[in-house]
Length: 160
Image 1 (spheres, rainbow, N blue to C red):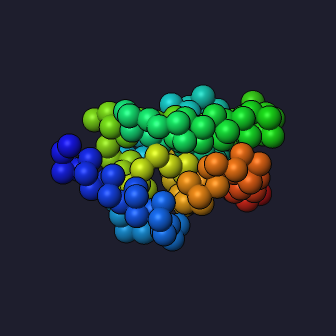
Image 2 (cartoon, one colour; image 1 turned 120 degrees about the vertical axis):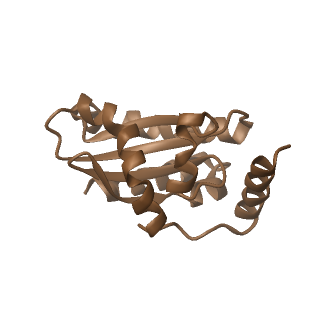
């Protein structure tokens, strides 16, 4: 196991045990904002003229456990069932990204990712202006109802 993967694994275990505070817009985010903006540009272009947009990312590595797959499926279910209108209008975009792929590694630094994560990003004029890593997703992952309620409330907060 490489040093980076070992570090990610150790931090993941730590996160599951104690959790981390959600990252606020920081200098690391500001440095990575341009790279994040480029990655979302395709979805921003899909909703041409969309001034404000919310992107819900599900970040994962190449190796995925049952819980990781469940988190993705449950978050997608919430997005599709509760926010269909926002998806259709382009106000909300769902993106699944493998951060182990070289072109996506910058997201680890941009959003301070330590493991598979849900991240909400508010875009204004195609540029990221704020983000939130949904750190409680891991502690709620085995309780489908509470997990979905948490994702719903978080997305709703960003859309309002």
